[in-house]
Amino acid sequence: MSDQPSGVDGTDEGTRLTFRGGPAASAVPVAFFVVWAVVQSGLLGIGDTTGLVVGMLLGLIVGLFFVRGDWKEYADVVFDGMTKRVAATAIVAWLWAGMFAATIQTGGFVDGLVWAASVVDVGAALFPAVTFLLAALLATGIGTGYGTAIAFTALVFPAGVLLGASPVLLFGAILSGAVFGDNLAPVSDTTIVSAVTQDADIGGVVASRFKYAIVAAVLAFVGYLVAGPAMAGTPLEGAAGITEAARPLGLVHLLSIGVVIGTAISGRHIVEAVSWGLLLSIALNLVLDLAPAAGMLVFRAPESAGVARSLDAVPLVGSVITLVPTTESGVGGSLYSGAAGFFPLIVLVLLIVAGAEVMQRGGGFDAVQSFLLERVATSVRRAETTMVLGTATVNAAITINTAAEIAIAPYISRIGTRFNINGYRRANILDANTSALGYIFPWGGGVLAGFTAMQGLPGEYEWFTSAMLVNPASVWPFVFHGWFLVGVFLLAAWTGYGREYVSDRRSGR
Image 1 (cartoon, rainbow, N blue to C red):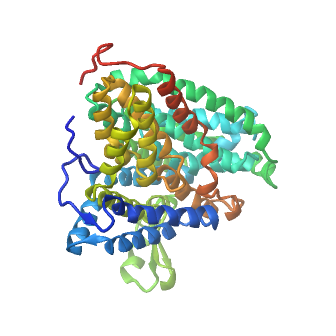
Image 2 (image 1 turned 90 degrees about the horizontal axis):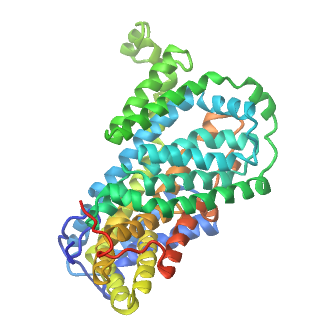
Image 3 (image 1 turned 90 degrees about the vertical axis):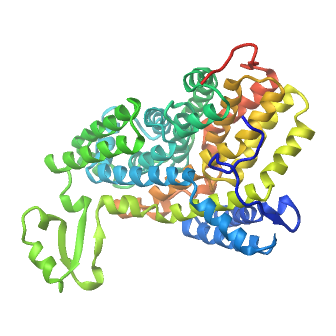
């Protein structure tokens, strides 16, 4: 691994930026956004993704006034950041997972879960622990924690809330399961990046990190078993009637989820895997009469449109066309709402990655890494500790865990090479902490992806009110697996548990 710095997508840097105040000033846009997010979500209790977009936009504008030289170069760097592949990867996962989750939701999958929970007597106290296990299974199978956060928040979260489970604990359990899969799945982007950047083979990396992941998972599971009863409430008013009316047929969409998992495990791209699951869910909805075609896609055409009036009478085509007053025209259905709900988050992510690119080109990341390398990492124990803390620092600035991982990877490689630390160990430290913290910080991509899916629930269920939404700033203490995973690696750094040197075992690609 070269010691030369690289951009957040792993490519060589382009234009370098200089700032008044030195490299530290390159962090102004991201720092402004973090302060904005803390004030908006934490202090004021406003969980509004579009508000965060404004915060990042203003942060990038404020950064202009610290730039030395031509502002055009700064603007070009912003555009470069917004076109990074790493941001596109997250966006694609959100769009596909959003459409898939909304479609099986329309097909009554939540009804099926409520029915199943009542039959096997999984009450409010046990629901978060079971949710953690199931979310971990799905995330490991499909390799995307973001997709898992979206699907489980849209599908499992409302069922748990209906039965009386604590909303904030339940959301934390979903995010914990996403952390587990993002960290351990062989097909996860973070797993692949951690292995490749540390010159290690993916199979060896996954095998070597299991001992860390399982310790954190057991502790997290026990945590949800203990916290579940302590934080559980009573079933919602009218829940008994809803439970009795719930139909088990919606559970047929377990087949759709199984197709996604099976296709992903077979080595196919996640876009292909989710697409097959989406197509099957549409077919099941139509064949089993779980949802009408208009429930998945509908064109609300104005009554004055002559062509629409003609098509409305055509078999099949007419089933997805509805004539409405001009003021009510538009497109709807699960495919539309599942994708459209993530548009504000997509804009936010593009802007944040742009801010991270400004910090990268301005030397902010290099300054932090050089300080840690030269002043802090003076022994193997302290070196591994700074690896953990360094990834935490970068994750605070970059909300997309894969992007944060790529940004800090050169430092992990440099310090690991200096102390002869094995590539497997370096990859494990890198991946575990970026996976965990990406679902803990309130402005993290995984947290916001789940929250975005949650915001659509009041429109899906009459009984789900806005008061049941979980503010992203309140969930961070309850992402148990994320915290335990960070703790396990801090403990491993200080005790030497699992430490391997190059001479102990040769990693290969």
